[in-house]
Amino acid sequence: MSHLGLAIIVAVPWHQTNLTHNLIIEFRDEDGNVIANITSQLNAGRPAGMRPGTTQYVNAGLSMNIGFPHSGDYEIVARIEDLEGSERRWTFQVQDIPQMASIA
Image (cartoon, rainbow, N blue to C red):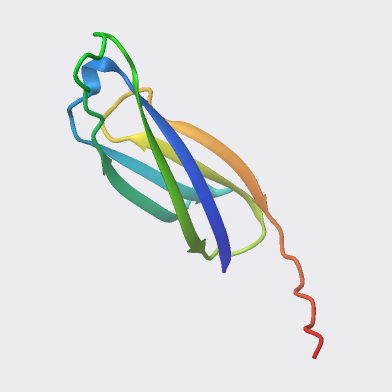
């Protein structure tokens, strides 16, 4: 089991504000198999006095424990459901590190 922190910022264009969107985050192994996923809803509103055309930003921070089946290459894939062109990918490696014996 590994502890993982993830921070994400979603840029929401003006014409997509005041709408509910599903943010989907998947953790995939090197073969593209999904080993864990998270779905969350987001809704960026338009504050009073906001200039038309202004992009809104939604921030999310996640802290989780995740079990990686083996060491190797993995990727995080984040996208907004049903919004073409929203997918983003980040790759990372998992390595087995032997735990040090505790000293009594």
